[in-house]
Amino acid sequence: MNAQTKHPQLKHYFHPLRLKGPGIALGACALIYYTVSSSQYPVIHQLALMAGVVSLGLIIYRLISYYTAPPDAAIDTWLEEDIEKLVTGAYQQLGIKKSERPTAPLFIIAPVYWKVKGVEMKDLGLRKGKDKMLRFSVYQVTLFHLDEDILTSYTCHYNFLQGIVLNETTHEYHDKDIVSVAMKDVSVNYHLPDGQQLIAAQEFQMSVTSGESIRLLVSPNTLAQREKATLPPTGAEKAVSVIRNILRAKKV
Image (cartoon, rainbow, N blue to C red; front, side, top):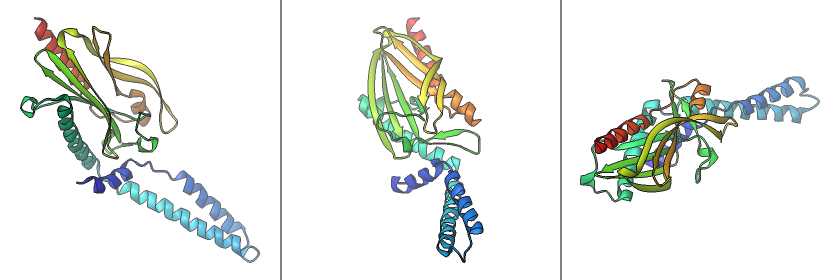
């Protein structure tokens, strides 16, 4: 599916169902309509009726848009297709030839629901699917490539809603310089679009002898608890396991 067709459908999927505003307006219009005399105040009576009809129409439109959004399976398929294209571009950024690429790329796809450079707050969205799993409109994608004694990485933010790649960075390390790779629970303080705060999460950490590190927030656990949902698989645990095994094998 092309981007022009996909974008409005993704917008419907991730746009929150907001009925409070038009609901209050509809109630106020109904109150005015039934309490104000039509004979004494015909203009006010008619305005209340018209405004009420508009409010009701907006409620119906939002309900239809929300419940006729693409199914979860379609969202998952579109994301997989986009990530596949992104990974191809990442290998090109790293200068890795197609013949040198593994059949199963090692990457981490971490959800983002807080302000990051280049992403507007209105593009930050999430939705709990029928399978109780959260799906996000923005992700941080990291690709690792291990070649002999060198580990290279590519990281970017991907605006799934707009189909835009942002904040690309690449790193290259000698495997002997890698000190540790692990998943750790961390305290954070991120302000979310809905006014809430994220205070605890899980982070992928890889440190090297120079003091540099790759740190990726991969699991916003308190967000999942609040939504009573599960987080999408990130691939972080697999990345930790694979990198550890390779480093151990080289030290034997």
